[in-house]
Length: 477
Image (cartoon, rainbow, N blue to C red; front, side, top):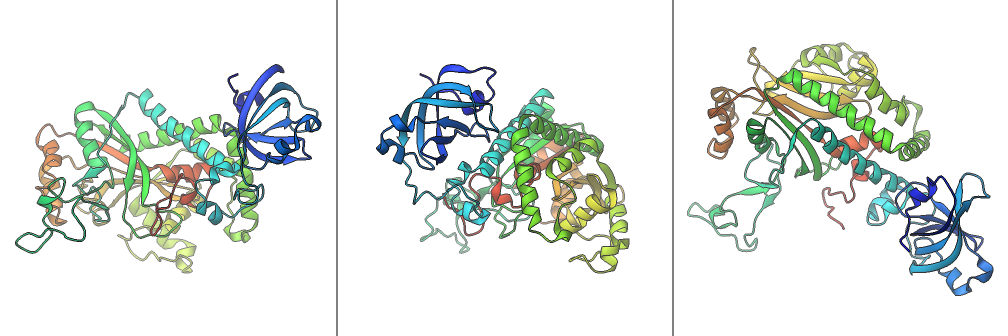
């Protein structure tokens, strides 16, 4: 008999005379009641075993973590809190689990302990919920862009270009590290490497994405990106996923409209599809908040925070206006900020971004027109010669979640900016071609997918919203 998912059994509208369910034992009590979960839902289904007619050897093997198959009838439950349960007629142990050694016992575990057991942590309620939310959010991303007629483009993971110009990249090579070939100048001879040149793992698919937008009109990428940034923080990963749409003929205002509409769509979609998981994660966050000092607790619950983003138009504020607000605000004057804002041109930190969203405007904020010297080379220079058509979207509890810009479509201006920053024109000859042949206004943005999952799940550490986190000194699993 084909097995039925636990989620389908729990949502059944009628009792069923014969069904089969398979999953993993969460708990087994009184030698009679199995709490069975197969990952399809947050909720377990209770399976009632006829212990008097079940061999002791079999009962002893029903332990937390064991994989089992149960066949029987779906009946109305006599216990509280559940509509149906399974009256077990036949039970089979599919895979044993040593109760003394299985790490995921039915008790509260620290997040650090769970990270050390990332291969098993998804068997807990919290991580099962997080990964189901992540999956639905991922589908929502594709759903949104496909409905809008965007073309999904797979940009290269191995590249010779550094889109951000930061140089924090993982190098890719097939050269023998213990005997690197050298050229006449005594430098590493990359002509003898696999690709015949210096290559890295991508930090962004944007530059390649732009070339496709200038032919297909509107495209998006959604794939892994890598940063060799030695940041051991709760907001940074060395490997993460990026969503990057690029749209021909869109200016910065169009770009802001697209980003706002996109974010609200994917959050709304996920709230509709994952209501049980999000309610559970809201309760989990509430419990976690109780252990914090009152001043550090969130002013909003998880669902309230998500609705806050859906129900409020994003406030659009220039960088210059934001600096004036921050310079004159109480936390800055009383030196409560870790980074004091003294003058125009400062690179805003998370504490400043969160102040603007949570305290001053009390709604999501889009900052635009940043100083050119703190933004990337490809952003369109404004007529003032000192700011660029850049934008960042700021969210409560997290700060920046989206970064984007109108791209510099003028060939001469782009070349001058590259020269000023020491970026080799020969390396990006193909990128400059898009400005040589049929250039036009175009815009795009990047959204770190894990930051979005972090916001939607209410988790506070980015390592807890990706299956196997890659961070400095950690590539386990």
